[in-house]
Image 1 (cartoon, rainbow, N blue to C red):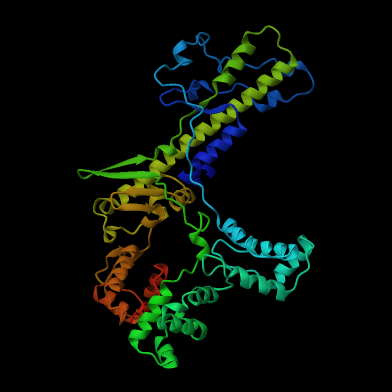
Image 2: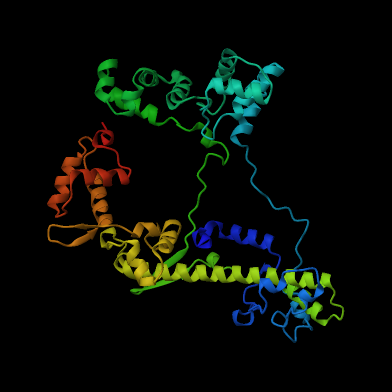
Length: 472
């Protein structure tokens, strides 16, 4: 179950961890068969038979014939040497990208200030307290306590505030802010020489920040006595600002989470073909070195207690490695069976790519087809992705409840959400549809739905209310 939950992106790391803990497990070469097939690898002794009571007789019944294969003494030269590839050039230099992180950039600029040793410690602590977005989200009182208890440095709110003002002059503009409003104000202050629209934008951020975020534009116009054209210029100035100035430096603030699909579905002339990502099918095998050690033990004449203890340890590691290999194979089978059931259930969608073709489907439906537990299907659906010719989808995307139409037909709630998104995308942004209006439009299309359900679906789609969708 734990291996089933592991996403493809980090499965390699999980396998490497297991290989580090168990030297009997190794990654085999492509095409090489595992020497220990399942039917050959059944240990004849239980753990109880190997519990030691201080005598050598406890190890006398160790049978290693199942781990050692005859005819393996002579190793061909072709297995030890490959003349088809040149020797690696150890002196070759591999180029790699070097970037300055956000904190390093801040410390570089801090070094340009003329500070005392005491101020330098306080300022460095301030810089270290900035988050990846470039904000100082900790209270000044908490920073004073940190400096006192961790670095034995006494400071005051006034000193920290003065140093923070200096840090707020660093690049990129907006760093060191304690909230979004202050961040935007810092950026606008550096652009005051660009004319009246920037000055108006600064006033809006200072006096009407809440009204601006809630799009109460009428209040802003009345308060500043400006017309629609001036308000548009103000909005353009503000939306060009960066709400996360720290995120533009280095890789720290960037979202580098790439989706690695677990499955691939291809439409081959109307026939859907499912394949598993090769990363989900690693080529694992039992270590050749461990088998050689068992063979050496079998050929030796002297079998003292220490040798027998070593053989018992080796057998434990081999058993553990075989268990892990079997668990990986079982993971592959579970993934394929579950995805195949989903593919067959949602066949129309995988052929057309139209979300309105999605059938209502719950975990129980797939569990009944695959004879798996519902919790197992849930683990697969929550952390796996499938790549199709229409895009890459999380498996959870294909599961939805049903909704009844006026004709009594059951449709997927996913279909209703798709139509809801289409209605909102086609609306006039100067006069967006209210939830009541959207409800009426869906009911006209035959979907028996309540206004509160429309509001719930809209929130699930991360679509704001009509007032916040309005633009000038």
